[in-house]
Structures are given as structure tokens and as C-alpha cells.
Length: 91
Image 1: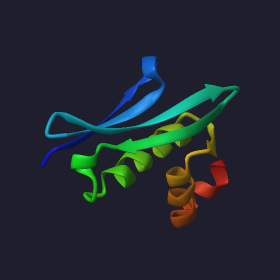
Image 2 (image 1 turned 90 degrees about the vertical axis):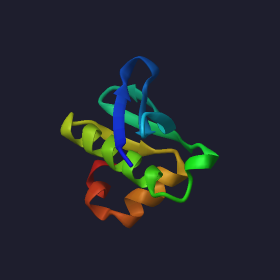
Image 3 (image 1 turned 30 degrees about the horizontal axis):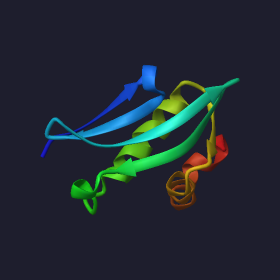
């Protein structure tokens, strides 16, 4: 199965696709060098495949690479950062 993450700047979200189908997304609000991730969704038919983790990792990596800080308002993003402490310095 082919997994692809894209950054949809116009919608302020990162999207994950599985075999070309939109499987989920992570919304954020961006202001003053901070991205506040407030909502992560994996559509029901795609759950249980680790897609949310892949999506959040890609979103956080992009955020880090661009020099932004992170506000993990989304409980999943907060949990992911807790489980992956290398991202904690960007919070």
C-alpha cells in the first residue's frame, strides 16, 4: 500500500493518502512562528494502520524544518510528542 502525506497550505492542514484515497488529516492554525495543531482525523475505514502516527510525524517534521514552534492542542499530537520526546523541544 502506498502512503503519501501532503501539506495543503490553503486548508492549513496535512493530509495522508493511502493508495490515492484521503485517509485523514491534521489541521493547524499558524501565527507568529507557531503552529497550533488542534485536530487530527483518521477516517474509520483507515484506522488501526498507524496512519495517524505517520501523518503527525510528517507534520511535526515539516514544522520543525521550517523553524516553527508547536502547540499540541490536539490530544493525539500531544500524545505523539510525549511518546517521541525528540519533538518536545519545539513545544
